[in-house]
Amino acid sequence: MAKHNIYKMPIIKVYPHYITKAEKKGRGQQEVDVIMQWLTGYNQQQLREHLANETSFEDFFAQAPQLNPKRLLITGVICGVRIEDIEEPIMREIRYLDKLIDELGKGRAMDKILRA
Image (cartoon, rainbow, N blue to C red; front, side, top):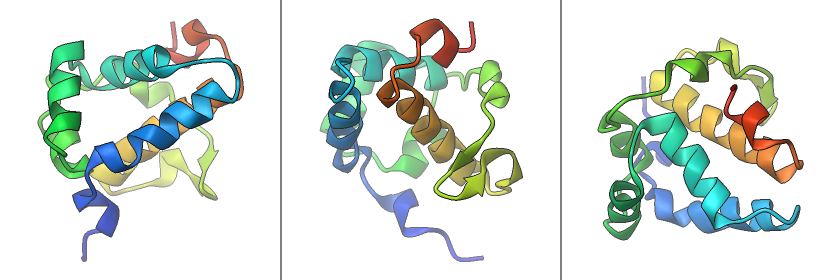
């Protein structure tokens, strides 16, 4: 099966869009970073290094120190597809992140976003 082009895309190419989406609801970069760290287990410095190094989505998730087990509680539809029906592991991780950023952009409380 061919890999999706997004797998090789540097995460920094999408990161500004995550921030823009958050800012439209009065949220900001710090909350985007918290979400990304919660999902992957990276600390702030590691996250910054991956962004600066233009790490691909595939490598970003493959190298994650600890994918949060609570991410499995993320359900719903993103880009017209049910997250829980996505079989490809990397694509599912990308869509988890997309869904969390969407929730932030819709003004949802951080404790709800982080499945606390």
